[in-house]
Every structure is written in C-alpha cells, then in structure tokens.
Image 1 (cartoon, rainbow, N blue to C red):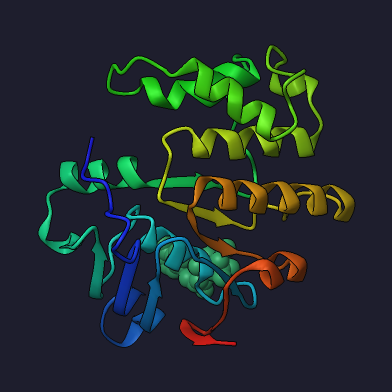
Image 2 (image 1 turned 135 degrees about the vertical axis):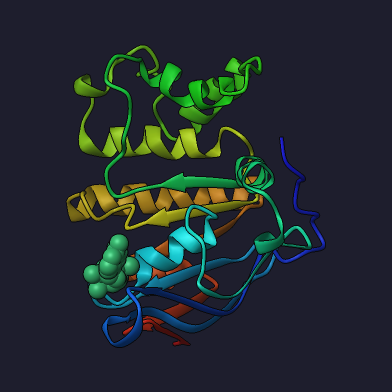
Length: 230
Ligand SMILES: Nc1ncnc2c1ncn2[C@@H]1O[C@H](COP(=O)(O)OP(=O)(O)O)[C@@H](O)[C@H]1O
Ligand SMILES: [Mg+2]
C-alpha cells in the first residue's frame, strides 16, 4: 500500500498540465496549462462541453494517465519521479473512483462487489466496513443481491460504496449521475455528499448535473482543454 496523504496537505496539486495526442503539425492539444489544487476536505466540480478534456483531466488527476507537460503532486511527491508501482500504490492508498457506468461484477453480490477490491494484493477484507457502507447508501437490505437484481440507482450506490471501501482521501467521479433519471440522480447526489462529509473526503467530480456542481466548494469549467474557475 502506498503512502497516505497527510491531513495537512492538499490531496492533489496539478500545475501547468498539458496532454496531447500526435506529433508535429498533427498534434492535438487536449489539455493546456491546467492548474488545479484540491485542498483537504474540499469538493471540486468540473463542468464543460463534451470533448473539452474533462475525462482526460480526471485520468491524469487519478494517476491513470500521464501528463505530457506539467507536474502532478500527491502526498508531497511529484508523480513523474515515481516508478509505476509507487504510482499505483499512491492511487490505491488515496483515491476512489466512480464512473458513469457502474462496472459492477455481475457474478458477485452487492456486498462482494464492495469488498472485493480490498482483497487485491491478498489483504483480508473488512467485511464489516463493506456492510456499513452499503447501509450508509441505503442498501442494507440488498447486500446479497446481484447487480442484475437492482435498479440503476441502486447499482450506482453500490459503486459509490465500493469506491469508498479503502477510505480514500479523494473521490474521483466522472459523470456519476450521467446514466440516471433526474429523480434517481438527486438521490445519488444527496447520498454522495452525505458520505463525502461523513468520511471527511475531498472530491473531484466531472458532471453535467448543476445540482451536483452547486453543492461543491469550487466549480471549474473546462473549455477546449483550458480550465477556469467559475
Ligand atoms: N487516445 C486518444 N487519441 C486522440 N485523441 C483523444 C484520445 N483520447 C481522447 N482524445 C480526444 O481528447 C478530447 C477530449 O476528450 P475527453 O477528455 O474524453 O473529453 P470530455 O470528457 O470532456 O468529453 C476529445 O477531442 C477526444 O477526441
Ligand atoms: Mg468524458
């Protein structure tokens, strides 16, 4: 397991991030000069049009993709200077992910989906924490159900519980309500912010949902790879 971010540190600092595809005249800049600091315990929303670079930024911030320019600082370390194992360790110790589609494993129950990520690396799962999280997302009565036996909103709530299993310092979410009807989206948003507060987490959330963005401490807009504060 990687080093945990200290409570006194920002959970993430991005400085002058550039990301591009192709070379020379064919080079396409997807991110340009992106600066973003997420203080401990704060939530940040990123809004902006499709194709503007939001998911690319989330991948760089989540240490799933490498920037072509600029610095990503996590737990006092510049991740460009770390080897792949150390980067994966930092990610596993500090970050939790929620996507638009839940990516639950069909052949496992809700409870198993929540604690299974913890068993990666041979660790003993904290089943009591998994049960507690499922209760916290209002699914205490659904723990033994399979994903196909649950509604879209319930599946997404399992995915949120799973993302929190390792007590992440930072929750990264890419359009977490993008696949839900408005009423269900509101329920998931309310639950998400209750958990963010209870767990004392920071969050970086890409969203088109203005109700979700409004609840965050800071809102940024991405436009053609450039990030500005709203
Ligand atoms: N592997 C890739 N090769 C070339 N272009 C890419 C690649 N991945 C993403 N892009 C481009 O980067 C831009 C931003 O994509 P993305 O970050 O997914 O935007 P958003 O999440 O805001 O919709 C898009 O124009 C997309 O086509
Ligand atoms: Mg996207």
